[in-house]
Image (cartoon, rainbow, N blue to C red):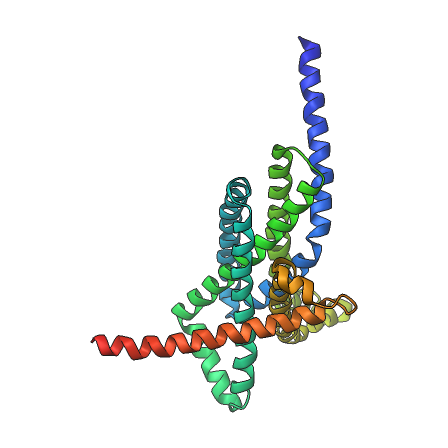
Length: 296
């Protein structure tokens, strides 16, 4: 009886070893998209009043966990029932990401000519507006959903390649999804609180010495980091969407040249699909505005 108990423990240990190895492989495969995920979500979680940064980030983090709880069972169910549906969902998500990225570029081009005080005034009004904050959180959670979907699919593809049993697939992919949320939003939290860390160092060092200089550097660096994240996050949105179209639309995958870095056609694809999505949405909004008053 004791030998049977130890045999069970041995099996559990072997299973955990397999899961650890599989999770490591899946995490390596998703490293690229995790980097894009970090850039996008860091950009999404900045630009709020200092007192609202952590509550907003926590709200997005909770939304990200809920996204994973929805995605994981649905993906495994679709894999069993109708696997091509996963591809279609991912492509729709890519269109959404491309739309967001291109819309940001269009917004910048057409609003960069505004006077400084007008931009500052608008920014303050938006930050004070509770509905605007909720809208930004909702947008961040939607974007996280698409990025989480791609992370889960890439991780699942890795464990399927290795032909692991279903239980190992489920646990390994769940671990990768958990690491994605905790890792990404943990780093984002550190970024958005850089200035607080800087002020703390300055206060503790009495504004003297190395730590005071480090604190001043962190405080001055935060606005620059936020601007960089805005650019990098937008580029990441377009690249991720372009990567989805490149790898998951068979026709595009075959016509894209293979003798150039894949980021170039992926960026182009993201821009093209994004412009098409913006055009469709703009026409749709105009038709909606035209039809609704007519009903009244």
